[in-house]
Image (cartoon, rainbow, N blue to C red; front, side, top):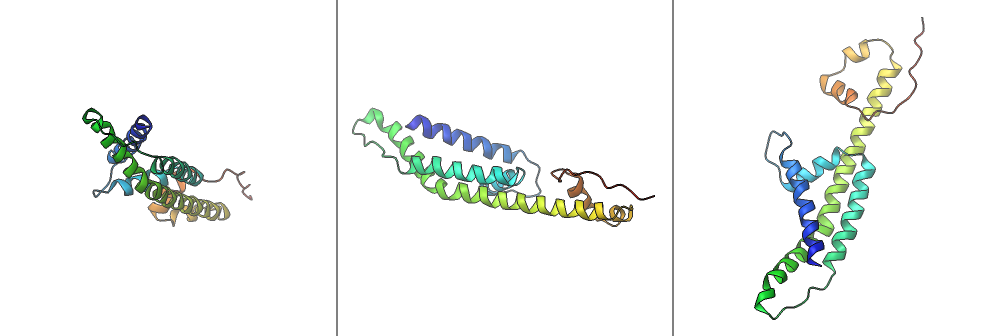
Length: 154
């Protein structure tokens, strides 16, 4: 049981480490890092991660921790109890972070699709020239719907 808890803990720590190496202007909490990483994924991946995180953490949170009476087994007991405590809080906080990130991802995808449609409707360069650079970056960042280009009228 403690092997599964420790492997879950290692995975969570690696996700936090990935977020630490991302460029940012201010120091963020691991919760905010997790939201930021999830927002980079497709929205459905964030929802799937939320479901998996809840199922896994709930399994460990409701598992029985064996009571130990021997002094030599005290370390294993402490690790098991720490994992159970982490899973108890994690079964609610991790899915929340994943769902917030999925919502941000869905909003960004919707906004990029709207920008793409606006540019596609206006076939002149004025649509791109009049666009702020943040919107242009969002437009060319990817995740736009693939469709056939409009034929330009001559």
